[in-house]
Length: 136
Image (tube, rainbow, N blue to C red; front, side, top):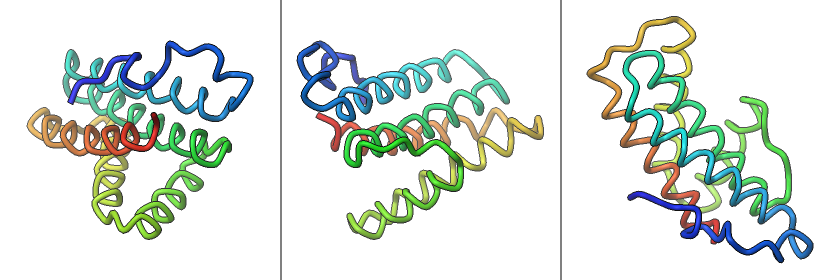
């Protein structure tokens, strides 16, 4: 699924005063979509880094939108994904998150096989699609 900024409500400036967390969530989701798209032009560790960024921004976007909180550390994000997975009965969230963690490790260590990138992109897309289903 390809999202645009208008799909996630980025064109409504009046939301800022009413609910800044929701606006921040939409903004972060748009960045996640941008990184996902950027990963399509990259290979290896560059693509892995972009996929990790997309995943973390998607999780941060959900936290901003739903909880009006900044969830930025890896530990906070991981715990939040576990919470969402359990509370929303969505076990695939943990799979998608673990794929993103593998991309993080791969780009940090400089060892990401190009053959794994399309599969990882599919999982990270699932995470972003899930975030988009929450963020309206």
